[in-house]
Structure formats: C-alpha cells, structure tokens
Image (cartoon, rainbow, N blue to C red; front, side, top):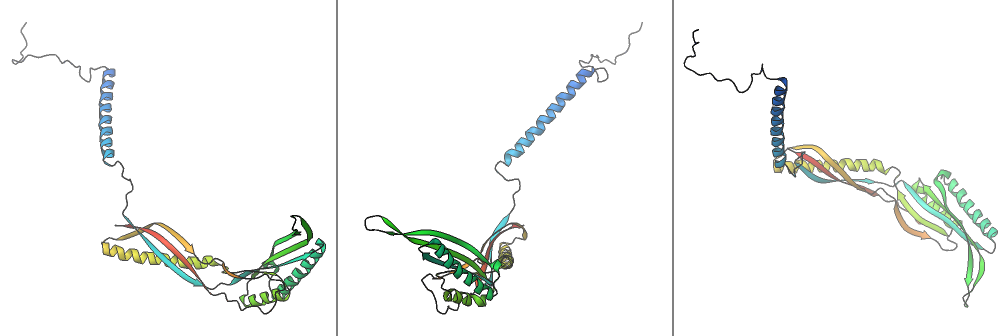
Length: 267
C-alpha cells in the first residue's frame, strides 16, 4: 500500500483536546479560572483608586461663608405689671378678709379701664405666720400675713399710668415688675431675617466678584436673633400706703436683630 504524503512536515498530536472534544468539567474549570483572574484585576484597580483618595471627602465643594445682619425697629404694644397686696392681722381670717377686699377693688378698677379678665392672672396667694424674736433666743407669735399678687397684661399702653395710679390710690403695697413687649415679635423677626439674608448675599456677591468666581446656591444657613423680648423697667412701689400720682410711663422702641451666617457654593 502506498504511504501518504506529508509535505516533509512531521505531525505531532495536540497535548490538549479541542474545545469540541474537551470534557464539560474542564471547560467550566477554565472559565472559572478566567473569571477569577478578571475579578482580581478589577479589585486591584479599585483598591489603587481608593488609595489615592484616602482622607478626601466624596462630596468636595468650594464654598464661602458670609455673615449678614438685619435690623427692624418695633414699638412695644403690650405692658405687663405685677399688682399685689400684703396685710398682717392677728387672726388669719381678718388678714384674708382685708386682702380680698383690697384685691377685689383693684380688679374692679382694672375692669373699668377696659382690661379683660383674660389678661389678669393670680400668680401668688400665700399665708405665713409671723413671730417676734426675743432677746433670750425665743420667739413670740405676732399674727399672720396674707399676700396676693396679680399679673396684669395691659394692651392699651395709654392706660399704664392709670393702672399704676389706681394701684396707689387703693393702697396696694406691692407694685412693680413692669415689662414692655410686642404681641407678635415673630413678624418683625421674619423681616429682620430677610434683611440679614439680603445683606449676606450682597457681601457674598462682592467677594465673589473680587475673587473671580461665580456665586452658586445656598448650602447652609444659621441665625441668631435678639430683641422683641420683654424689657423690664426696674421701678416698683412696695412701701406701706402707696399713693400719689403715677409717673407717665413710656414704652419706647425695641430693635429686633437677626445675625445670619450663610454658606454659598462657588464655581
């Protein structure tokens, strides 16, 4: 039989079976090895990238922080005053009776001045025994004191002097704690808040222009407000048998101030 031609080349059998001849298990093994190698490369690249950004925020923004101030002047429209009477008697019933008569008179007088009972609040009613201390260290019972105090809110400031005058005329011996405030200070604070933001925006725009950057959106805002709270007048009448004409009380004016701290993005 004739020998087949080989063109001078010696053929060698393949060490690995072809894909069509390789068992399924071997094919799966090779694919898993290739997948594992690919996953390892990806993990390594990510680790290198993360190493370059250690200690850096993922949300880095260029910002500027500016402080602005807004001020609004308001006129107090409410006054509060404490009216009270203290009496001492040998018997507690006598002290209570005289105290009640006097306080009922002042309440009636307040009603005549068109002050609503909703604006009158009893803040103290107390009864205490009183003693005289003797030279030998002992004490001797003297009687009882009864004290009653009412806080009055006066919405018509033109009647403040009239209220004080009635308190003196009726013999109240605890009058004081006058405070002036505004009924709705939050409305003035809002006006001051808007002015503070406008002031901060003007400052930020000027600074951005000098720095050659463009002002962006507001990132954060905080404020500190003052004013619009009760302002005390340190005047009182606590002597026995107070009387005479009351002083002409002036409410004056109050400044409501808002200091705003605003942070802007810049580009």
